Amino acid sequence: MKKTVIPQGYRASLNEYEIQRAIAYIKQTFQEEFSSALNLKRVSAPLFVTEQSGLNDNLNGYERPVTFDVPCVGADAQVVHSLAKWKRYALMRYGFSVGQGLYTDMNAIRRDEELDNVHSVYVDQWDWEKIITRENRNLDYLKLIVKAIVRAICDTNDRLRVRFPQLSTVLDPEVSFITTQELEDRYPDLLPSQRENAYLKEHRTACILQIGGALRSGKPHDGRAPDYDDWDLNCDIFFWDDVLDRALEISSMGIRVDEKSLARQLEISGCQERRELPFHKMLLEGKLPLTIGGGIGQSRLCMLLLGCAHIGQVQSSIWDPETVRACEEAGVLLL
Image (cartoon, rainbow, N blue to C red):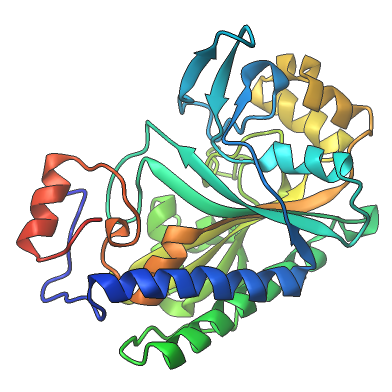
């Protein structure tokens, strides 16, 4: 099965330079909408951390971080997979208060990523984190934040189409919420990604809740590291992509683990050794703030709003010969 498929008859709505202008407009506009809606302040963030800090995101557990030695420090550094843990630590260090949060540009290299229309070894996203109270650690609050993010995306799209009337992407601002168990019960014979497509084709904008723990089938809907999201209080945000005729994940987010959920999830995952890492010790001792946070894909969002068929139209990366050939034959320019 081909990894990259360009829809028959596809043509970009904008030329190559107009796409660059539109990308800049999307990033500026969305940051304004998003940071205002969630009360977030922009900060600088690291490209790499040390392995010993425990601050790198372990994702699904099998992805290999890009590692290099730093002789003058006497330690190895890892390019971040995401900033899920670093952001929470930064909120404490920078003296943020309840109701306040931060966002930053996150750039990562995921060397083991499978390449296709929407996946690249280069990852760029807005990482964000916000301090909450213990009373906010519930699904109702999570849904409230999801709706605010979806509204910021839809408002950005509306402003973009005024600036670039050639574009035709239409988004549904009404979010449909469903848990992974409800999704499995509804489509028991489908794979998780097929369930997402089936549900999104009907609802167009959806939030899939509770990712990471095993379902009644004995398998999780998808992998999630045990030490940042609370598996009972997390989600992914999807939009239906009319160009690719598929569900497109734009954001992975959630209410973060507290002392109890971290201990439980480390035990379930067989990762008890992480309890001794500096970040995890601070969390288990109650020294870190309670937070909600996530990542919003910059290239994914640009792809969706610009009606692009391949993520390489909005970001510069490297591609396998099959992808290059498929795009050349379809007249799709990879940056």
